[in-house]
Length: 453
Image (cartoon, rainbow, N blue to C red; front, side):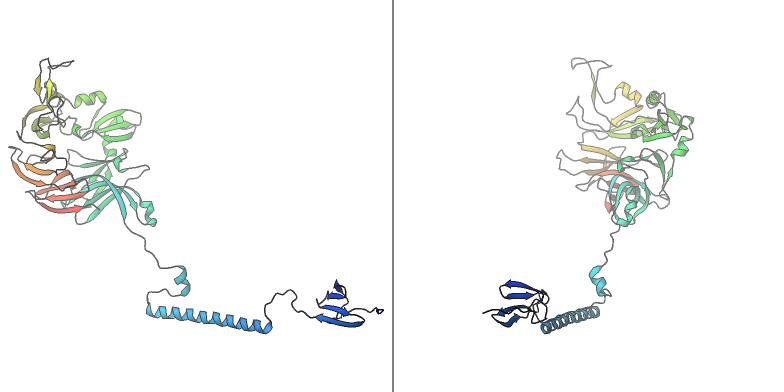
């Protein structure tokens, strides 16, 4: 049967624009309706599709229901959050005021205060006026609060029992360590401090302030007007002296209390012998323990009482290392077949060290690791171990400086060693190597302790 040609239009929208999918099957390019032709009759069947690539899994009514459910859930969550915060505010008076601050800022944490410190070489003196015991230390501080980090550094600090830190002086300069701080008490009774080999201070024992002593001392000598580059103390047994390096490179020895200045050769001569004594030199007594002798290694250690001529604030060479030896009567190379004498002081040593006489104060007694802790005209305190056991503790003992008789003996605390003792309130106060102050009465009874912190 012949087919009649007719215009094929989309039965949905009437558009003639179409795409043939297969014979007699078409898809409208306008509304995407698919339709086909049925033989002679222009019967058009179509599938009307509203998808249009929107990919919606539900129709309009279902979408509205889902949106309502979601909105209801969100509303319930907001109401519950408000209720929880209201209840928390009622029962927790310290809670923060708003929800946002509670969840974002958190509780405030206070910074730590104070500092930690490592300390070096504590010394002792009594404060003028109050007569309080004062420990002076060099300490390297690290402050705990970040806001105080600029205060970190090396300090000269003063501590006293009951009050703790009572004074301080920060040492300026870069690369300063506690080992660069040195203390020395001169024969005038003043305590002097050298900081970083560059500044000489004197401690005001009343106010606990440090003042520059170098400017006054050095202005007295024309040779020092070029300026002083470095300052050090001489050895303690050499007296109240300073080793100076001037800005023009000269090494000089200066004794400021007597305003005596020496070069290397003159300094050696000034501290040896009777002929170099300054006016006002006096006889003094000192007590010294002998050390183990290489010539007589089996000999016991002895406590020797020595009379000598003291040069006051001038150069000296006070005996501090004493042992028995063989005197062959001169210098040279000798053997045991050569004649010799067993001596504690050779003729040369007696002359050089200005020795007037000596004796063994405690003959026959046995000492191990002994040391003289305090020595003046009326009291003599020694520290020692009673036997050779390395685990034995030290004993502190007071002797009669005239007869050598034992007046009292106490045990020192195990694990610590007394490094320095001074007279204090009809007794003594000492400082240990672990920075503890120990006070003893006149009979040696420990009356109080204080830890430097």
